[in-house]
Amino acid sequence: MVMMPSKVLSRLRAWRFTVLVTAGLLAAGCGSTAAPSSGPGGSATAGADAAAKVSLDVVFTGSPTTAAAHYTLRCEPAGGSVADPATVCAELLKDPSLFGPMPVRMACPMILATAGHVLVTGTFLGRHVHENLADGGCDLARWEKLKQVFG
Image (cartoon, rainbow, N blue to C red):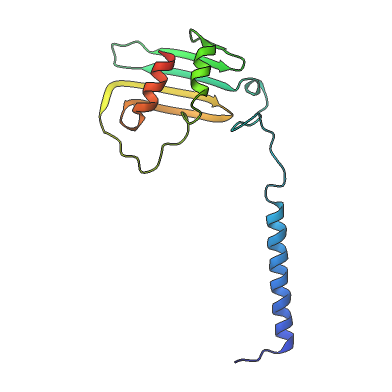
């Protein structure tokens, strides 16, 4: 066993104490203030978007012979260019994971049903959305849901 001089041992103890106190202060400071929230999963934002829970711009495109379909949607308050904004909002709000990340390690068929694409931009429950989905592959389920709701 190696004997350490008392001066070295004292400095080592002081250093350990300083590290522990600093770590404790940093841990206590993390998350000490809560961000304003507009409910579960949402966050308050400034400006006109703060009034709408959902603010989306949706463009469906298909083959060169198919005309593009463009929709706007605002929820709470409901509005936009869709035929029935309140119903569309209710359908989209049933599935808040619709514009979330794709599951990891998901097997996807590499088959496209059509040449269709949908571009969705805006905000959904306080999160920025920029999705470009194809009618097939890993996007098929989300494509079908959006086509059902907006089509």
